[in-house]
Image (tube, rainbow, N blue to C red):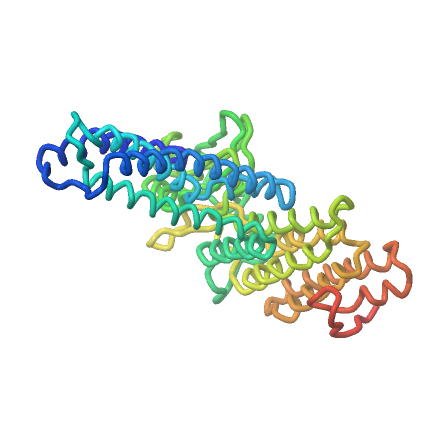
Length: 423
């Protein structure tokens, strides 16, 4: 359900309850009345209703602070992530429900001059007030997520979750060779192309592939579907989306397009790159002259290093899927190990070239990755990044002494040198 519908559901449900429950209470339980004077009950219910409007204003203020702070301090791509917190919408819905039902209960106090206060409705308003206070406390607690350490851990956790769901632990032969992967992605060795599907519509980003649906379609037609775009790509008019090789019958274009989920922006689903992309965004924003906070960049490298260590121990060939009989049915592009290294380190290296702290932390991360890699080609890719980093340090604006310091490894950036690199 869309999040914006949550407060509407609460409002509609509370309106229905305010029309039905008091009448049931009056008709079937007329003897159950609260031991409270009419004036006291009206004052209590009026205070509850007016207080909910104040809390609703605070909810909007908290939402504005979260959106504004995350956009300015971290990345504009984090704005909707914070703004879409379900707690925010449930809080707003409960506050509206409490307001509506409190007003309805006031109408049934001293109904027709009876001088009574409905017991169950008063109890229900009290329960709604308690729930409102609890949700408000949870909402205020959400502000703690704006601390940089919490933001980085949340992004890291999202990345680790996607890696677990997308990639298997490396076992046996893996397609880590770039040329072999490029050959499969181009469709060489498959049957001739029988269908080509192009995108038509407004620009949209690919958020995920419905792998099971596409495999079933390919198996039904005895074909191979080769997707030309990757998760995270933005599709524009007339973009080549996929090709169908072979097949006993033509597949429905509508069924094929339903296997590719689109949205206005990227998501974490099936996209391990996105968590790294957001972490790098935070790092390079911290390294900008306007902010100049290399310590935050060092903290982001902590999370990036952990994600790369997990990726380095997995087979990155998740982009080919076979059916139960073992026949290849679906091929879609996935990043190579070199792609992940480029995304993770290139921009930070470029923008942090003048920071001794960042250079030392980058070298420590790359050294740890080199030691952890068991695949020779991946280890060599890490060594190329180390040589590139050394070259950047040697040609930077740092003086000779600072360059020697920058060539050392330090997991804290500046704090504890591990070893002197060989220049």
